[in-house]
Image (cartoon, rainbow, N blue to C red; front, side, top):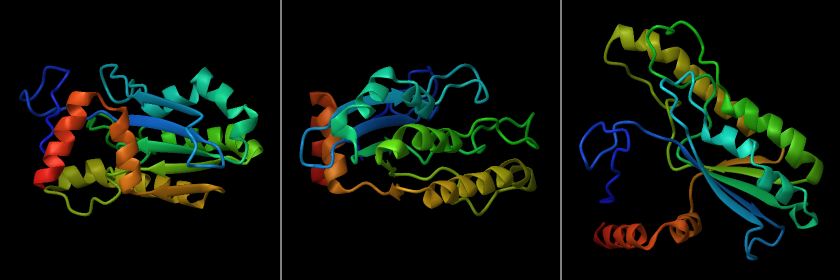
Length: 204
């Protein structure tokens, strides 16, 4: 919406990033959602040379000791952990590697999140909400060639299976972003980006 995303990997033009990176913003709230969050943190994918070596944002979140401490506080019981993600969590569905096209990608942030939910959230009756403005591959239906279909169709199916796993988990919701969510995220941005966003929104 008029907000440029410069590429930090030296690829593409100055105004467009050729390498997409997933960001996760975690917001832990008590039962009173109008109160200040108990904990907020931002995580992003770490590029390690290829998609099979990368460390995903959700993996960093699960290992965050400060988040785990906040979840253990009495105020968190019965509350909600809301995750704002660029896309839905992956489920053996990432990558563009043609060398391993017949193999499922080894990473499933979906399963990692569900294990985290069962171990850390469920005993404290904390709900999990996964909020995302975009879908990744789960909605793909058409391919420009048979080669691309063979490469990506299994990953599309895997992405759909991951969403079904999340949808069927107890105390778990998948949501689109509401205006209040955008307002919250914008409050975390630096002033220059916030002003750029507001100016673009006014024109749209």
